[in-house]
Image (cartoon, rainbow, N blue to C red; front, side, top):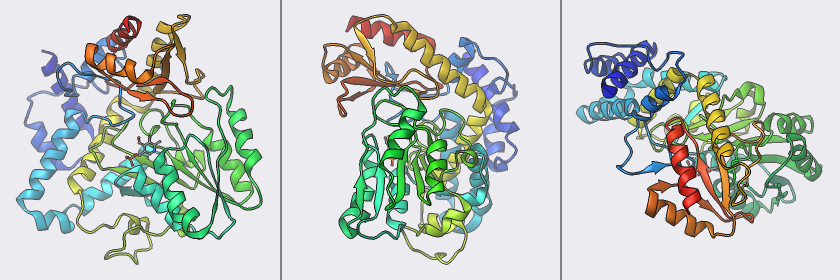
Length: 422
Ligand SMILES: Cc1ncc(COP(=O)(O)O)c(C=O)c1O
């Protein structure tokens, strides 16, 4: 019955998605006689989220708290992507070289709508690493120019600057240290403000850190930077899909995000945003036919590429919209409060993620005091089937717990119980 209910609500959303390819709609529509509006309903109780979880096909026994490493695709996205793959293999040259042009543009438009920007500001790339490389390789910097990179930047947001600018051109990378538990956005803003000099050209900054999930104040930093003619490049790998992101409002120049984490899109898909008046700074990483295109499409031109996955990314945005941005965000905040509340006051545990909603969302880092995180991680997996990521950089000794739309409160109870046993 659950499977039936799930199928019904999945299909209702599918059929309601106006921009969906009619081929996909017809194909998946044939799987059920009825539709319902379950997913997009206003229901928000645990039974709703239990059903959402069933859309994800996890390995038996696995309890997944590792979405920040890599997200799963819901069945709807798996089905759509498989379908596109079969179409491509049925007539490869047709679909790779033109027949999907319109569908590709629909995906771009859906992504743009999700992030409140114009579709001419979105390129569809493969991952965050590639996007950050494209930005770092594009900048026309000189020896002695400075790029600010906080100490919690991911390797993908760091190595690219080291390789393309520091080693080649003698650009100085300035590495301010962020506290693990900042009290406010202003505290973080002040740290960035204090390292800006007349030679600062770019602030390359992560929106949500992969270490402890703290959210950095991109809007405030962008406002400050732009007053001084500094460009702002944002790594949104850990934030896209967790809460509502309005890129117009954030005001940064570039925003790069892996769609295969919290957006649940197929692996090897990403979002690359460049504000209209900042696109002039960018050069494509790969040069192919179409390189003279003046539009943002010149940045995603790889010739033969993973189009079924790219179109599957469009379905992931449909899935995002079916639940709804507000509902997803409030669920993340609810789960976070539920998880933190369950360990609150227990001295065997210490949260290494700031509690304030302005400063954290879906990722919470928790230390089992007095135990090595590597050992705890292994125990959780071996004895309880729980997968999460141990974090021991930056003085951390904590488990990175990712909460997601497929996380139920029962899962959180199970995790808390396992932590207490460990
Ligand atoms: C903050 C951050 N940036 C970039 C990346 C790299 O993402 P991708 O492998 O999609 O390029 C990750 C991966 O975990 C990340 O957490």
